[in-house]
Image (cartoon, rainbow, N blue to C red):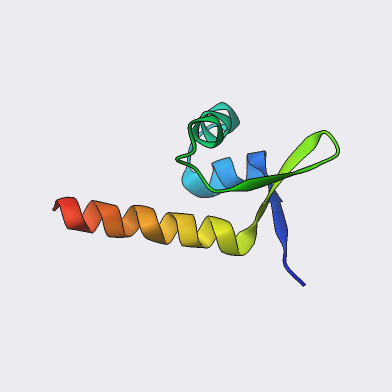
Length: 62
């Protein structure tokens, strides 16, 4: 079964604040979230893939 993370947990992983994660989601540049009631949750695998993609982008620029 897939584990889901809160916005706060994703912010901790990305070493930023929750409002930045919400902004990324709004712009479509962050990990894809799903609405569950009033909360937005992120599949752990989607966050890992998003972070891996960010790492690939950073290496391509170097």
